[in-house]
Length: 395
Image 1: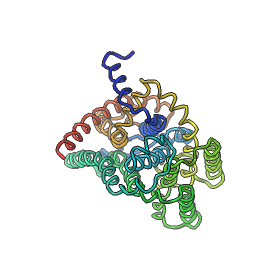
Image 2 (image 1 turned 60 degrees about the vertical axis):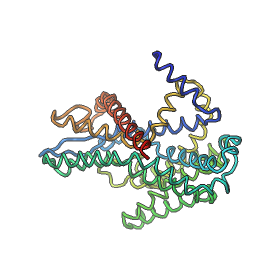
Image 3 (image 1 turned 180 degrees about the horizontal axis):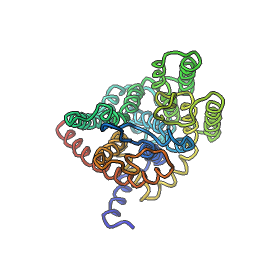
Image 4 (image 1 turned 90 degrees about the vertical axis):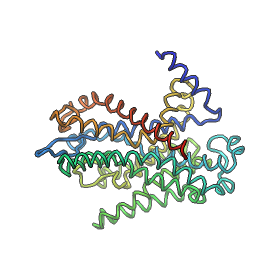
């Protein structure tokens, strides 16, 4: 039961929500963020070694039968899909607010007026996306320096810092696609998405079939995530709106993923596994693109039911708060886990936190730590929000 303050917060959020707000899209974004956070918290493990070293591990490295867990919790494609949709809608509103309000979700095309405000829109958007990165980098620079001064091995510093700073990679790609959104809107979404998928196919064929250089795979970092982003842009422009299209994306994506995993040796896990020869995510492979396409189809199918569900004020309040804090949650969630592991190092083998994730019982042990991670994430959100408020007031 909510107390009086909670009920007032729910009522205030409900009253402040514009009537035309697309709550279903906001729910998709919140679910995507929640999937990424929960997935990382469940599959990222730190294991102490000899000489004070620490290494990164994953239960998926010991128990590959848990790969279906990654199918549920690897939701980055939905994040990029909704990001493309939101970018197109925002550009349309910036170019012609009255038309945007009248059109509602996923209707009129974004043309001249919206594109005319592109540079100003990009500057504002980049500020919103990249401003939260600075405190994160400064915090980890301080942590790394402190660990180095206390004689921590480089491998330990690396094992703690790299996962925590990993979200910056994806945010950088997301920011680049967002900056290009005014130009991408000039292209045909379906054709561009298919072309990007073809680039991923060619790169994979060279890497895996012709024993090409591993660095070539990083081309897929842009091409792979361009696919769901372009589908999101197209959706905002009125495309991909039919149920038949959504079902085709879902079925085709699932079929493609199954063929690639079963017939061409792609990993079954949709997240990276330490020690694995090939990762579907770093950089994205054709299997990740196919799987992401299926997720886009599913998102299109559930958007309507989610929209209706979000008419419940309490549920909507939670989703609205997650959306307001999406970048902070995305950037800081692994820092919360890494700082917890760092603080516990003095206690040795802490179950679910600093033990090898080699048995099924490790997952229940890890679940015990999730409230601690969540509390630290809430603290990071509070601090960064105050910092952002001060920066905004001084600007």
